[in-house]
Length: 227
Image (cartoon, rainbow, N blue to C red; front, side, top):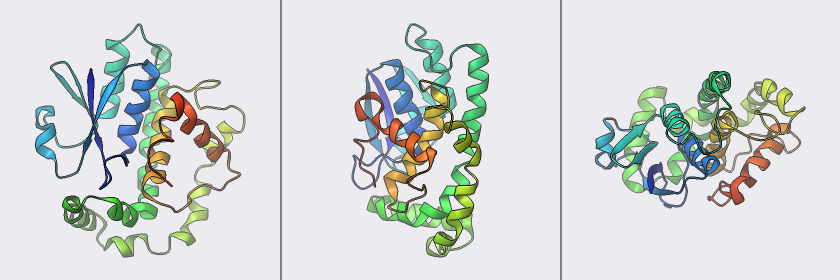
């Protein structure tokens, strides 16, 4: 069976890495069984064979794979008899673009979520997270997230391209989801997993799409603890 190291909070069932969620859904799309291993920021030794210190890490036999796009591409090529994540060569190139767009969501989201992430972490991870993030931000977690309500309208306005697409079709890939949807959904599942703060308005087409994503694969993402 495949094994996936998957970022977890103090509650091992609370999985909150946007990049791990991309792979969780990609594996479900391919119909591949996987054992998910709760991993925390300070568990570097557990994934040392991958040659780096971040998740997702997927183990397939004696192969250790890291970085979400590399893993998705591997799954597509190693299991060609399973449903395609990309829809062919041109589709792979286009989905790569969607994956890069998804990457760009992390920066705008983090000022809304950083302090809430800290509250969900295992005790052993808290010092690491606070010290590393405050060094990156140049301020405290509390100051970094202060005034998030005032910034919310600007964040929502920045989702206009996503909203325009989802106003005309149920998924970014069209009538059914593919890896483009999984990559973009990962960040919204991240927010749902760590914070009660509502980034999306209830009547937003992006919120309706998120609900459809939560229901995929028997409610795989919905069953994970979240707000």
